[in-house]
Image (cartoon, rainbow, N blue to C red):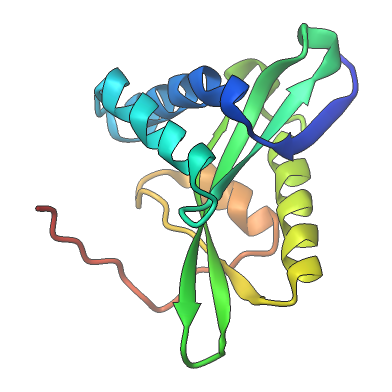
Length: 155
């Protein structure tokens, strides 16, 4: 299971893999079953419109060049900083490849992209409050818990 990992922006050819990972993530983290067609449309919308965000994917060449990990970046304008926060979302690594630094490689790539852009002031993400494994992973990347809480109202 060793082999070179390639991190790149996702394209239309990656939509099925990303949607599948999003569905698996929702079940694992929130025990929530997502509508596959709706998720497919949502992933396609991001791939088609870069103003919505972008996905980074990790592929391992030795594994038939298949997607083994992903993250989504969306944008939040900060008028206080006159720059963007990049929200990291839809993080998922195939179970077979966990604890192999795939998330670290994705994070290093997104960090390099943000630094190169000169328009990004930081990263934010939210995590399900009981997901200790995810919290530990994010903290290992140097992220810290903020004093903010997230509120939501769906319509």
